Length: 241
Image (cartoon, rainbow, N blue to C red; front, side, top):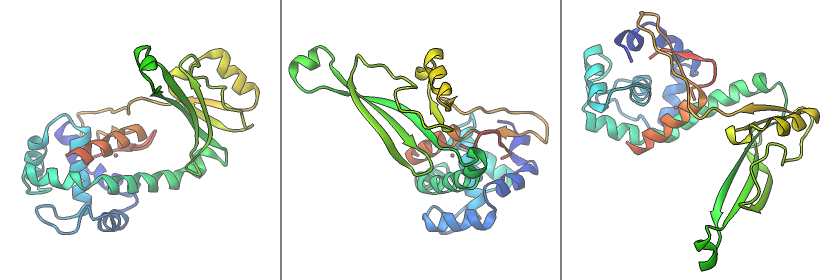
């Protein structure tokens, strides 16, 4: 993270991509992430500090030092930590706004399903000794935000991209466990498309005053999780802090 990439004029563009000052301030009040300007003047300044911390390479003390030197905020690291701990619901609201705004254009009316599986240990002493597992295979429909397929097997059944019945025209997303060429071919033969989910967001940094930072939706989710302990971004968007 360079000083130039954090203080250039591109931050105003980032604010617009996130819905504008009014939406950011209103959602911060609604989720109680920003109620009073104690050390931080506005909700957008708090968002800037949150992104700088979650996506940067320096710790909390480095962020507050940078904020003070840049005239963004005058706050202690402990106080900022308290702010970030309350920011999770707010960041989720902003992510939801971005996804809702763009999903129609990106999907073009097509069904989007996310495939994944999880394992649960079987009950009983014998099963525990033999590491017996139940595996739950799921498909999550993104637009309706609900599961439309669940199948439970034992550990002998692998994660397969074609396990879920294909709906012609759908887009299904899975991690690298589903990257089996023959299985993908079967899905595509029935009119579906397959995308691989990225495990981590991509960040690109530059050293010029016009440097931009690319943030994927996965990065935003990771940032939101980190803030709850002390924001994707969306694919192909460039954001300046």
